[in-house]
Length: 250
Length: 250
DNA sequence: CCAAAAGTGTTCATTCTACACCCATGT
DNA sequence: ACATGGGTGTAGAATGAACACTTTTGG
Image (cartoon, rainbow over all chains, first blue to last red; front, side, top):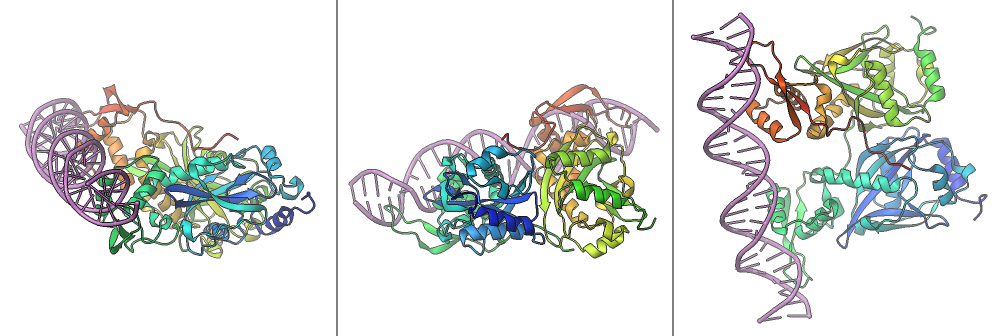
């Protein structure tokens, strides 16, 4: 692949014409599987370099809608929980020469603005319902364990860190069920909390706290198949909002 | 003032040439005086319509720097505490026709993008050190009590609400001393907490909590001049950072 | 002396933390 | 039967809310 047929060039031409310049959206898509918190990453065409999924905002598109679109395209999900968590607006967020050289993109085709302000969103998705799909300029889309990430393009390692810290801070207000199978067990919920917090929790205290919250509904069935006592299945009570963010009427 | 000599026209021409399109910054500048939480508002030239101070980001300017510049220009302060709290990105954040008509700005001079994404920052400033200054397109800049605001231009009533909610949620992590005289008394700090939270607090419990936090340093002097017992003066211990926001190196 | 607000102390309830123990299941 | 992890209970510590009381100041 040489600079004249790289698919990024027409893509960035399209973006340059229809999207807002100097702005982008980066999505930290959290999933949970095998007791590990994971994020979805993309490998750029013809390279071993990975980045977060991202995209641009159409001139008349709501920012939330753009974030939703971007995450949908990589996951195949049509319903998801998204939260805007930070704007990365430093004039020198990352070393541009270095990063663009690593992407092997033909520079003249893609440097359509001298710098980019990125709005960070995190998504909480059900790992098993996601079909990871690369985009036009990437070869591969897959999950990575959050504590085992490679060095990413741009400032994306930093963005993931900030996303995780935000999630950690907001843990108790977030609908974590989006990250779990439906229904789920309390031990599964505990593993998830532990992954997000990065600490071990006492299962007995965790139980009491969760049950006392009154938000959980115990189902009659249990999860069987393990070599020990079958745990009960739970569901969050229907107080949770499926969607995002406060925004006014006019 | 007719449409041909409105100072907004050259201003927006300047902005259109040098700033990032489709983006703005709005600043919710909080102050505290006479036991009231206040915000700084601007009255648009030749109207009775008020809005938040705002502005635009130069193409190579850091977003935090832009926010700092905008707040400085209205307050005269060269050191201030700023916090990015939300991006308002709805494609139809407000009724554009209605708002621009209320501003009495000549539309053809100023509608340089069909919609605007606004990054909201709040600032905590020392009321007595602020010199409110209007900008090119406003006649007047002054403090308003937060629970006594007029109907503002754009979606600024909503933005202030979200700012206040953010501040309320982050109360305990924020350096509230920026809103108070230096040094201050515990009762003053309590009034401030009460204004932000919108509830009354028990002064005796508040005392214990503040002293137990270990962040306060009692000075030998007291605040005298009132017709009752003179309260001690306090200062926050020097653990507070004067400035803003996490952002990476490259 | 009195009113008003500062500042200290005590009590009770609630929540958090540590840990003992029993239960169910597959091997 | 036993190892493994699910699920319940109980006690002490820490935190938080309610309220009694003394102190200082100007008038």
